[in-house]
Length: 406
Ligand SMILES: Cc1cc2nc3c(=O)[nH]c(=O)nc-3n(C[C@H](O)[C@H](O)[C@H](O)COP(=O)(O)OP(=O)(O)OC[C@H]3O[C@@H](n4cnc5c(N)ncnc54)[C@H](O)[C@@H]3O)c2cc1C
Image (cartoon, rainbow, N blue to C red; front, side, top):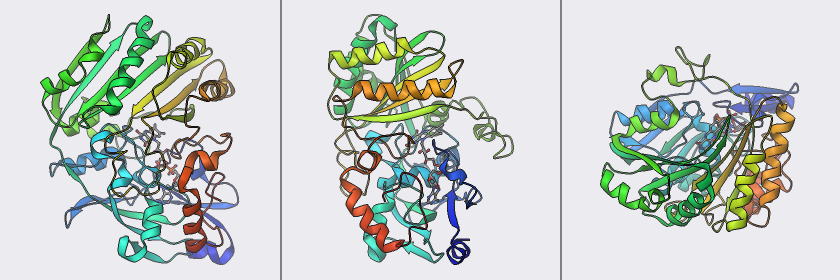
């Protein structure tokens, strides 16, 4: 297809899981979409996890769990591995095992003009670097990834909630604790508004020592009104927990219509992202609770993922540029009576309200088509090197999208 497109000057758009927020893997009337969803094999060979670009995350977790192995990946079960790994991959083991892209050791790709290549450090160090967090939809089409797996059979989990009145105090405690904690601990703090506001943190500990986990998160449970649940389980069971699939057959844990038995519904929302390099001050925490309280005409969520640990300490970091951030912030809104326009206005308003307290950067895997200064925001200090890689591997910019490196 890529060769065909190059000969006819037709833009080819790769799609793995179709979960890109901006819908760019859907192409447009002048392009042709290459659907990679049937490249969904998951196996182990020569000590490497071998994953087809079209594999959905829950199948990656399940396929590796049979061998007592795992990869750090995301929470959503039906996200495509291709898009996730190329942009980074932040998930419930991120502080201990790093980003998904940190474990990429080699990649089978098709170039923009349709040549098949195996990319590793020996064959093309710069392109491998770009594929490790520089963002999908550019550079090359990933067909298969070979990654370094981690041996994790069991892990511990926790969920703690607080009364809404304690939201700012709970956030202060969480952000002081988790980004600097033992890297076995990964955690997400959420401010959610559906019918009633909810404040909670969930997290995972990379072995099944629940007592050690409880000790590590003790400051969170000392806040008045805290309600904690914690336990240990097979690591795959915990990935099903985060995916919202606990107690369901694995088949149900796929998007309806993409796999037989898939039950996960499709949803529409607006989203954007931020990074924090230091904890939010009291005024910043108040901004978040006030923004949530002010959300009208649909649901809203502000979700903070703790970084640090293996993200900060990656020995061989790849193109993912947000290593110094301590927290990644996701802003989401589902349209209700206020429609998608209201949802978009709310998430972008959150980002504006936090300006000066954030790094100004954003996650390329949570693309926001209206993000001002998106190149510096997504690609940060990696931008110039990414552009140089692209000029070399795709000088005619055949693989492109609206917010690529340019
Ligand atoms: C419900 C939901 C939950 C999510 N949860 C997480 C999470 O926990 N952690 C996290 O880090 N991210 C998460 N994401 C974001 C996710 O990482 C990105 O949306 C990612 O790009 C999705 O990959 P995909 O293959 O499914 O998407 P697609 O829409 O298929 O692709 C996204 C982009 O990558 C390009 N692309 C896709 N496949 C390839 C390929 N094989 N080669 C080259 N380019 C390619 C596409 O052209 C497009 O530009 C979530 C997204 C959703 C919708």
